[in-house]
Amino acid sequence: MPIITAPQDFHAEDLFVDLGAVVDRSLYLKCEGFNFAGSVKLKAAAEMIAAAERSGTLTSDSIIVESSSGNLGIALSIIAAHKGYRFICVTDSRCNLTTRRMMEALGSQVHTITEPDVDGGFLAARIAYVRDLVASDPRCLWLNQYHNVNNWKAHYRRTAPSIARNFPGLDVLFVGAGTTGTLMGCARYFRDEGLPVRIVAVDSVGSVTFGGAPGLRMIPGLGTSVRPSLLVESLVDDVVYVEEADTVRSCHRLARNGFLFGGSTGTVVSGALSWLDANAAGRDLTAVVIAPDMGERYLDTVYQENWVRDIYGDDVLAVDLENAGARSND
Ligand SMILES: Cc1ncc(COP(=O)(O)O)c(C=O)c1O
Image 1 (cartoon, protein in one colour):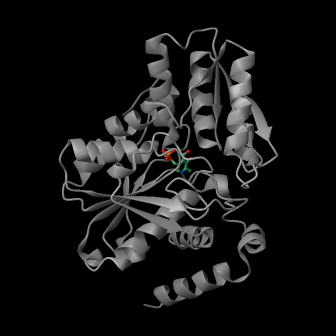
Image 2: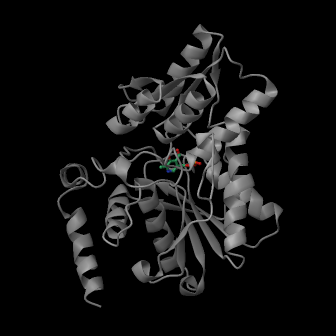
């Protein structure tokens, strides 16, 4: 029975969903959403704060500032509230209302950027705002998740060892790429341990992380409009791109099997299935996909029919419903 005093001390590290019956592949989802922040970002937040405390850059006077599309903001809000730090989250208009309210309920200040960059993304505008804050007040400490090595170290220490421990014969690991903290931590761990696991990054079409052309992306979590400095491409064996329409189909497919996951989980599952389909040995491989969060935060977007129709067109879900029908008649 876990008994905790700090909210960041609980995380269900060893929970995996066997998707075999849903996708007809040896595919397992590592669930990262079962903690007080509801996402994988709690581990990165805890590691970055602990390192800043150890180095003395974070003191009781500090104001933590961070750019986040939501999940890291919630995670930092929780830890800041528990430890008595002030926290300012710089987010943008694609951050959903519940997420903003959660951060505020936890005592954080939220600044929302509403003007996108020329390429349609918000990241550069958010970062420029953070830089201004830091320049204007010496108490402000920017953890900088895109550049902070403690982001990937959290996954090196915790996420990857859990996967290796539970899947000693793992062939492929699919990891969605945002800051690339999860991806880099896992890739470095499997390389350092000498484990022959292929590391496949999954990114959204429209993200520039792996050199793709910038484009409009509506689902937060994965993809960037500025290349993250944490990324070392030589540690990644392959990259798969997923259209957001496929992300939505994939999320709905999982939901109709009782698993309500967040948008980026749909992206990574979709990317994993295309990669396994394209690989001659795909059927014989054991694969793990990292599921960064759960679906409640996406009820007004990915799981809202009108939102989906307005953005991706009328047929996006129709195709999926046909597939679901075919499957249930098997
Ligand atoms: C929902 C979701 N998916 C994926 C990611 C990407 O993780 P990382 O930043 O470690 O690449 C994030 C990061 O915030 C996220 O919130």
